[in-house]
Image (tube, rainbow, N blue to C red; front, side, top):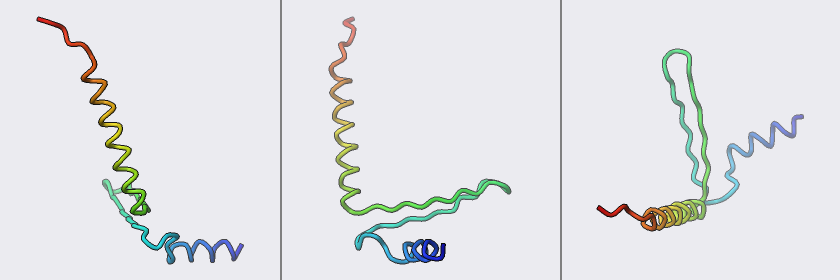
Length: 72
């Protein structure tokens, strides 16, 4: 059990990738609601996410343009 705690403490200190980008936030809404979030991404992940969004946008643009418009 001690090994698991030591490994999780080490994982918080040492990044798994040398160029890893980390973000943490605490959001408090009112008196009783608190949200905490953490995110990790590498530069390659940022590039792949951008490419995926661009391909989805091109695909949606093609679909919208291919819909026949009613003639007036």
